[in-house]
Amino acid sequence: MADHRPQPRIYVALDVAEERRVRDLLAELDPSLCGIKIGKEAFTALGPRVVEWAREGGFPVFLDLKFHDIPNTVARACRAAADLDVALVNVHASGGRRMLEAAREAIEPGRDAPGLIAVTVLTSMEDADLAEIGVNDGAQAQVARLARLTAETGLDGVVCSAREAQAMRAVFPDASGLVVTPGVRPAGGARDDQRRVVTPAEALSLGATSLVIGRPVTAADEPRKALEAIVAEL
Ligand code: C5P
Image (cartoon, rainbow, N blue to C red; front, side, top):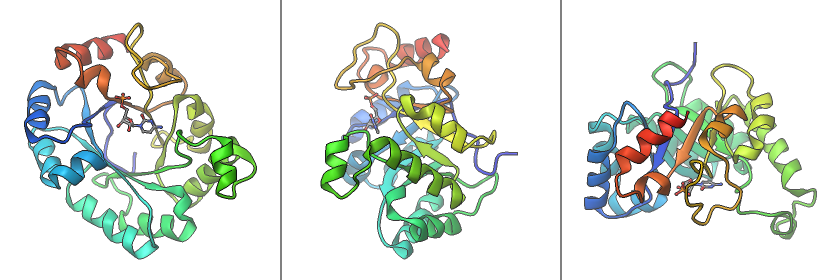
């Protein structure tokens, strides 16, 4: 049995900061087809009530705040997130072992617990960026190292690009392991500023367990239809 809440196949990224836009999108989308990812922009602009609106609409919520701080602070933030009744929370694995252990202690595994996952290396970071901050053996090695640390400290999985999904699945082989991937674009759709995109079906076949999809749904003329088309493609 999974030791976290069940996860939707798709989280729609709600990357907007105006209450009206949030409410319109929530009214338009179908909670039987997706969860909602709430990130730093919407959360900072609108506060925890944005989570409440999504929960009232029946949506599982991925609170994507990527906590990274001293262990005690991250633990308390994780507990506060769990109190908001979210389905998924994340932290930066580069916060280190004691921070990850503190996060795990704050969110005890269980069928009602949010999934607790980690970001390994931001996909915006290239080898040269890492070298500048003292990581000299490249992104791939750093991703592998931080994924192992994430697994060792008992977290439920990672958020990563679809290109890394296969390798990440090997680090989290249980049925309950979570591999959450953004950068997904429906076949033939606009790529926006995403460079290395895969289709939703490809991402799942590479081992992703949930997909994060933003603009292909939120910027569509008819978000519900766009979402339904993606679900049909799966
Ligand atoms: O609109 P789009 O589908 O590109 O949105 C993807 C979402 O996933 C955004 O919220 C973005 O910040 C997030 N994300 C990403 N790539 C990463 C990590 C997160 O696109 N490597």
